[in-house]
Amino acid sequence: MKVLLIGSGGREHALAWKIAQSPLIDELYAAPGNPGIAEHATLVSLDVEDHAAVIAFAKEKAIDFVVIGPEAPLVAGLADDLRAAGIATFGPSKAAAQLEGSKGFTKDLCARYDIPTGAYQRFKSAEPAKDYVRAQGAPIVIKADGLAAGKGVTVAMTEAEALAAIDDCFDGAFGAAGAEVVVEAFLDGEEASFFCLSDGKTALALATAQDHKRVGDGDTGPNTGGMGAYSPAPVMTPAMVERTMKEIIEPTIAGMAKDGNPFSGVFFAGLMITAKGPELIEYNVRFGDPECQVLMMRLKSDLLPILYATATGTLDKVEAEWRDDAALTVVLASRGYPGAYDKNTPIAHIPDASEEAKVFHAGTALKDGKLVATGGRVLNVTAFGKTVTEAQARAYALLDKVEWENGFCRRDIGWQAVAREKA
Ligand code: AMP
Ligand code: GLY
Image (cartoon, rainbow, N blue to C red; front, side, top):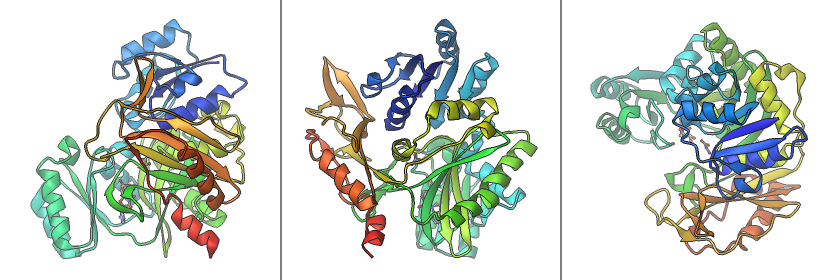
């Protein structure tokens, strides 16, 4: 099979690494890719926003299957255009990608199909939103409706904070994404991420993970795209997974199909495990980054036929087998991230992978033959262990061999699981 992978992050490096191991692969291309992905794929400098150019390339190379990594091309309808051109594609349609692209869309779906989630209201102007906040009281959660790179959510512990967040959204802090605001009840519990494939009819549960969104140790400081993750998430017991499938995923698949937006691709459900059970915080319609890196490390099965079955409506014919081991990844980011940071800082050394640990590339590039950091999140040091404690020790041991002066990381990825293992 000839495969084109769209994307250039750590998530796509992990997908490329795994796809390249498939006995079914003949050729793997990645657009635009990165120097890590280049170890497994031929890089193509395509403008992914130019759908006609992507289709022309796919036709020229007789690509059998396109795998789309990030959300932006999905929300822009790249999967629809590729499928219309007769090319099998992993990733939801533009209509189904609204599950990630519009928080209001997802909340309305939950209301229609009785999917457990926090009570909410949607607003197009500030005053009614503020009246609602005053009536509900704090803590309360304010969300820009659209894609805001993970920064559009304020968990307000006071009413004043909530009112300020509403003003921020309508004053344009998130551009068009903040033209509508969702005000949502605060959910109390432990968070977990759940990954599940669907071909529009059938669901295949993958695995669970926990990420660390805050930039600083002890989960402090501003939110980021994710500073590290581990899998499995201990709070997601088999019983909790079963409830999540029955109460959240299955009604979503049925509801999306009934509404004329059948979902094909991966559900990345952000869950809050409350006293009542699993409740949906949000859906993403692509693999998490860096959650994908730990999932790919733990997946024993060949990924390619699983993704292809998802895209072609034959998910009932495949299974996914997982290693029992835990996997943990630590993100090395450019100093200053998630704020401003220097670009093109030199990365002098990346240690070799071993059986137990591996470095995935995210925001890296080659400049005059030298490896440099070009992004906020730059490397993902990922390891296995019998326990999260062991995976953590191995990941940091490898990470300490990376030579990159401008890099920083959290030193406590996995701390909740490590504390549980000690208890
Ligand atoms: P989101 O971008 O929707 O995943 O929200 C970012 C983070 O805000 C989540 O990971 C949660 O930690 C927090 N959050 C979002 N919605 C709620 C809620 N209703 N109750 C409590 N925390 C929330
Ligand atoms: N790590 C969170 C995300 O990919 O959205």
